[in-house]
Amino acid sequence: MAAAKKQQLVLAFVDFLNESIQDGTVKDDDKEGLDVAIECIGEAFGIDLSDDAQRKQLSIKPAKLQTIFEVFL
Image (cartoon, rainbow, N blue to C red; front, side):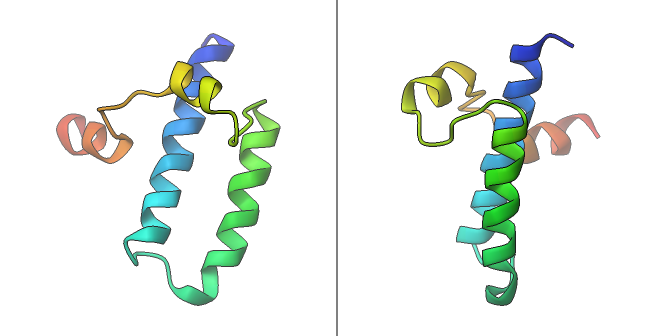
């Protein structure tokens, strides 16, 4: 898989994790640990989560990872 495709997958996963924090799926006690994990995952794959231009370039929106799973699995 090309590096950009992996980064797209990682960003979609990070977006899913952030949505899970925001919608209450993740317990309050676990939010801080998940935030740290999100930062580490982004960094490991060369994604600057604060870089709007990079996020726009890698985004799969309007699709969401969860929707892809619902449709194809």
